[in-house]
Length: 240
Image (tube, rainbow, N blue to C red; front, side, top):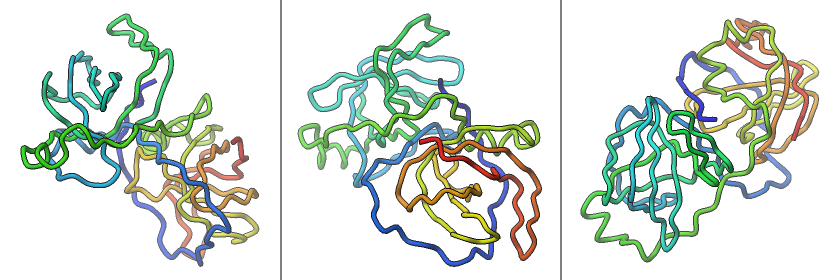
């Protein structure tokens, strides 16, 4: 399901020492929708971007569905609604692959579709530099477990989720271990990357791993010693 996302609040300061992983797995970041991007912005070629050419545009109330070519392949992409044009070149970050995805507005089920947070128009200089022959193979982000809610949705509706048990999924970007008899996991699902989202758990997970946690949402939580959170998940259990 396409997830509406809004970024809010401020993260925690005065963090204790960060633990680095013993080993990490190479895994692409899940990039979901990011509503900070009201309009696509032009960018130069950079690592991690994939060049696409739009074949067909289907507009919905809040999202745009794009039938595009990527190298020699044709794929469908869904992103935040924008003025995308058939025939134009764009660049996008790796998306989250969903199968049998139902669009209610178009009464259509897509066998495969990529959910992409950021798509940029390609400048003429970029088009000359990149062309469409030297495109990296598009790889989907890891499958997301069922019942997951976007971190940005939690932030946006903190009071509504207060006291409820939720499931989140993302990449571990920082770990503060054994503080107040718990581990403090900083998680990023790509939906609110400028927000330092934290959960506490007894599980030990290295930085760089993509995991799902389930736990109770707490708001305006003050642990003392400078550990104050407007929203946090406590006593989270490792799901995946």
